[in-house]
Length: 243
Image (tube, rainbow, N blue to C red; front, side):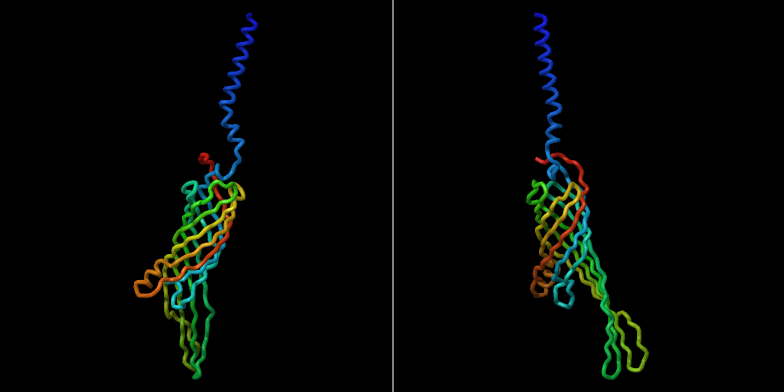
């Protein structure tokens, strides 16, 4: 009788021990079984390089009247605001010059000219993930503003016939600033917890330039296209599992 009672007690203790083991080890086993995908990592911060080409029609055109093409390698920095919202800032600048040009009049007078141009482009975008739960692919809508500053310096000299060539001197300086609205869509492929590649297409419209034109009785500037593709490094930190 005592032997049967001891056996029954041992069986109950074993069952309780198994239950406690399942209670404490269950969540860990479940976490281990879940693949480490984008739904379990909160990418709070990222940097990247994105070759970009886009056209703009606005005040930065100056007197030329033709859309200006911007093309370069844009460094980007971004931060995650929520599982679906992301803020991103980029910047790019370029300095260029035109070859010096000399023209000689019929009477022998000589005219020399040269010019330099400097461009600064700063886009600030918000990205919204349209498909947040895919393992490797993301599709994002993007919107934001782009500030562009253009400065052109022109130099000129006039040398009468028979005199030594005179040096160039500043002739004029033109500065144009404009603000653009930008909308687009992008696709991101997640290579790993840290690396991703991205491509996007966009369209932009001169907000400040169109308002100025409208005030003076003109028509607004047309929308212009753009596209880019880049490589990004994500500083990923563990976060709570998304619901």
